[in-house]
Length: 92
Image 1 (cartoon, helix red, strand yellow):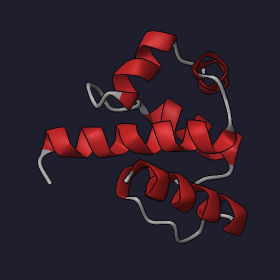
Image 2 (cartoon, rainbow, N blue to C red; image 1 turned 30 degrees about the horizontal axis):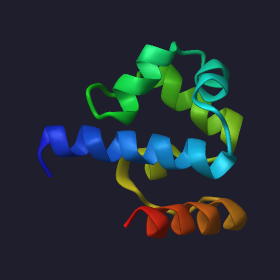
Image 3 (cartoon, rainbow, N blue to C red; image 1 turned 180 degrees about the vertical axis):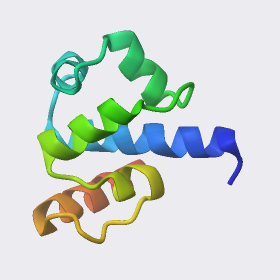
């Protein structure tokens, strides 16, 4: 995977998480402590989330950085893993 493809992959995972949680973009950005433009740049694959954003996502939403960065559902709560898998299927 190229660096650009990886940024897009991570951005897609952030978008999947937001949608799986049923959060509006503004609410999701607020809970992560980032601006709306920061969230848009992450979700669009234009930038990586910073370390604090990754940390806040793991703490706030009970997911793993491994899932956000690599897509591994191991270690995710079962209900979250199922919801994310359903979202992935919906977007395929």
